[in-house]
Length: 163
Image (cartoon, rainbow, N blue to C red):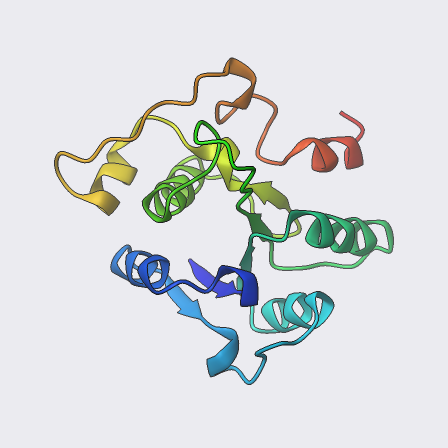
């Protein structure tokens, strides 16, 4: 997957894991975008045909809704939530596994706002290939938060579709 990490998501370990998993990752500092606003990051990602990865849930949810309601398009937004809750928060490896699970599910990403925390689960063959033999992640304890329950998007995305 072609990814663009915004300023909030740049992390050396995550970058190495994503590239090791075969993702083409663009960083703001390599694109002359360091310190730019969220709308500028989303515009750059879309023009570059890259899916934006961010930890900035609220701002990008609002941007997604603006684009949606005005009939625009974007390449997709992947969000990682950090709520200081070890049962919900994703590690760097967990982010890579969640992306692998999303890809394996063949869910459309373009024009979607997807919370990756909703895509963590016990490793599938695709995610095991990312992490290597012997790797395991704890399955999510809440049934409503498992992948496939409530589609790919978070609640705001579902509301946008009238579901």
